[in-house]
Amino acid sequence: LVREKVEAELPEFRAAVDVVREDRRTVIQVVVYPVGQLVQSIDYEMVSQSIPNLLLLNIKQRYAQKTQELRGLPVIYFSRHKEELERSLLAELSAEPEVKRHNLRPSVVLTPGVNSGVRIRLESDEYKIWFEGYGDIGRNENNISGRAHFGKYISKRDEIFGEVGVTLDDVDWDFSAGYALHHGKTTVSYMRRSPLGENVYRLEQDITPKWRLRAEYFSGSDTTEIGVRYRIHEFLSAEYVYSNDKPYFRIVGNL
Image 1 (cartoon, rainbow, N blue to C red):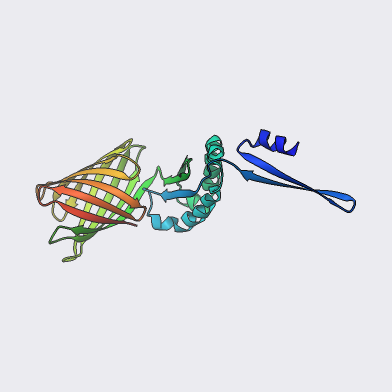
Image 2 (tube, one colour):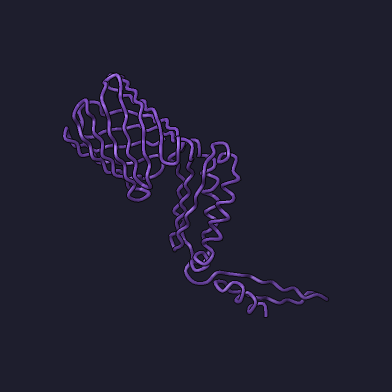
């Protein structure tokens, strides 16, 4: 009867029942175990394009441990309860102090399988802040640099922003003010960069969560760059840049 009940309620599990007589009482031990293909590993990722990922280290580590609890579940069970698990994880994230403090909007995507995926995005409808460091291979000058972006959304699609850049060869700073239009996975930006007094036009297309295409034109040097970036993880990316000046390979540190 116990076995039939478990199989009816949990078809992806089986029950082993052991009945033992101890003096005047009967002890029944039920061990429920999974059957079929099991989740062996979790490919986990928590990223944000709205705030520096360094601010999410604590919550990222906590949820890395939570997602490991999915290991050992039957893949069929995971698939059947995918939406329920996503809603549960989303409710927990929404209640997190860090998420409330930064006014972030969480989203969760689970991908069932022997090697399952957990993708968590924490984004804001109010601002966009990022810090990046660049190490360029194939350029003889200005090959170590960094850039900071501070943006404020004035509508769901419109962003005004400022950027600060520095090249470490001669510690040369530049400052930009600009506007960006966001439409789905496409972003079109214009900025005025000083003290060079040049116009910069930028087009970015998110092809997948890990791949991004960038096209950028710098009027001061009449240079066009086309870059294909692959995000290795939330703190490191690699980009191949084709330029009419000189093609090069770029290592990007995403803070």
